[in-house]
Length: 124
Image (cartoon, rainbow, N blue to C red; front, side, top):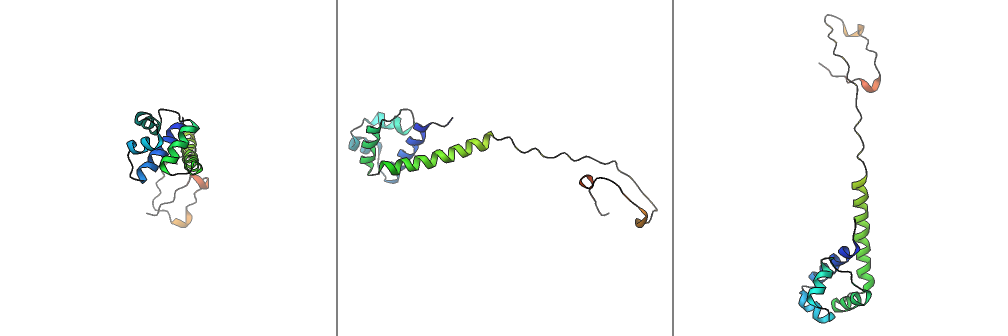
């Protein structure tokens, strides 16, 4: 199951780390407790729109940019999830033909009749 709060936390953490800032710096700027911000980044807490706005302001990132990045992450996660849920295409089973040994017969006199998809021709 894809959890939006986890994707949002991942994007917030990446934004903070790109800026080389610590949780303490951002929590102080956003006026959010360090523990709560940490839980939001780890996807353990749902952030309200007011809290997200304060964090975005502290990171100097537009909320629309944050949500766009979360949306992109969500789209990728959905694609990965649907690809994992799809059954693999089964490998077709090819029938085996019995081996036949022919000696002392000129090649132009040998006729093999079998379905084309079931014949493997190997030169000796």
